[in-house]
Image (cartoon, rainbow, N blue to C red; front, side, top):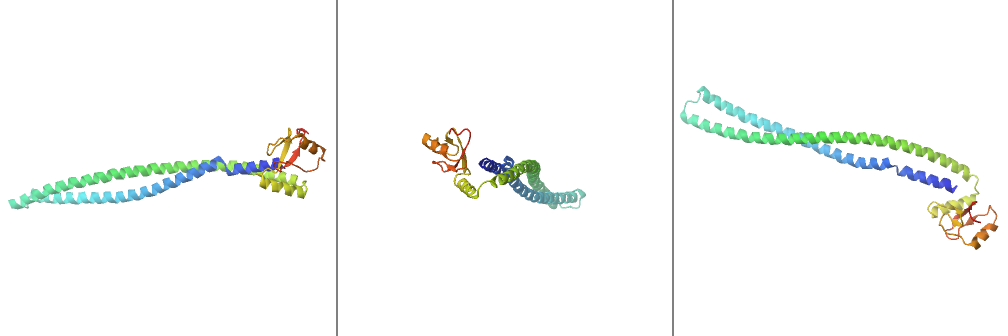
Length: 234
């Protein structure tokens, strides 16, 4: 029964430490970071889009004013030399203003393009993460299914085996398993306890040799139940 229990413990440990599960957890942390970055980038793109529209409107407004003033001069509607001089100075100011606004417009456009590219990159990265997570989930589910099957088979085998063990011996075994790291019974091979690796001296071996085969023998060092085998050295 100890062999079956050790096998069950191993299967349960493997169920709790499937490699894909750790990878999925790491991927989840990456996904959260990328999703947060995407959220921030969407806000940044929206803000820069609004800022660019405002910059476009500002440029168009000043251009329209310059075109209007230039049209008045060209049409001869402004007859006074003093008014013409004043409007020419204003046209120069408007041109400088347009140049400044165009610089702002270009700078905003470059920032927007960079943010849009980052948004595309992060979107692609998130898609790759989702694809990888789906693959890992499938692998984990497949492996967990195999282990669940092995576990169910071993648990059923243990039940059949335990039915043939006296209640008091089973209780002692379970208590020792709890105290001794899952190993309540150990094989006696080559005069050595398989639990604590203590080599039994001749006097103890002689005493064990004389005891009935159904008598419960325990290791004097670790207290585990000793299971006598054909290789015990008795």
